[in-house]
Picture 1: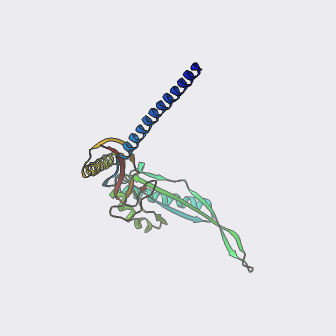
Picture 2: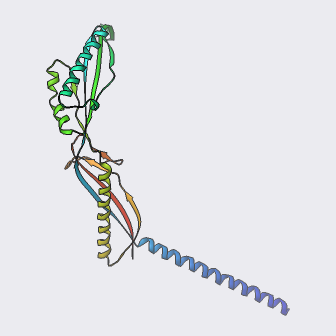
Picture 3: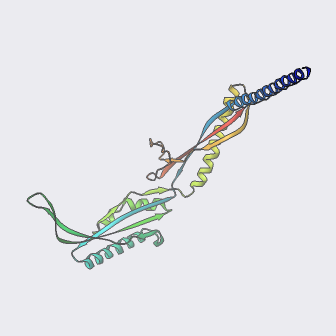
Length: 252
């Protein structure tokens, strides 16, 4: 009988000890969870902006010309004559041969079409060939090519049916600009975080996370919309680029 009582006592003692140990472990886990939760809450997130204005150093411009004839060879010979006139004209304006690219000739058959008495569209007899070719120029001499594109009537006045497109402007040192903007945006974000921490009576701790936005390139002082994947304006010679950096700091 006494042995049974001792055994029951031991079982009770062990159960109480296990329960106490479990309570201690649970309290430790809860304490760490609260500590970590509070630590994650003691952060500040800020967004900095970096921007820079610059002028394009590369221009791309193109135009097309065409000829029509009932005979393919005649149309091709006439187009070749016009191509020679355009080539000589551009050379006389200082455009390098390496900057000019003439495309392959596009050949289209033309037909006289009409609508019959029932209102049905009909394709009539063959009316000849329309041949079109384009010339494109890429140059770092931006002002020179701009002037040529604006005075293209000099070619038209020579009897050439020439259609000019609008120039496109690019910048070849964009990677350098991007590095400058990233540095500027990061500095701006850090200064904002320091000010927030100071106003809250805290100290700025370690950087936890940095997220960079996409580069946006627009015309200066324009109302162009930013896009999720980034904007690149090519119609303006003068450009303004901007980028954002989001930083998340611990606050002590």
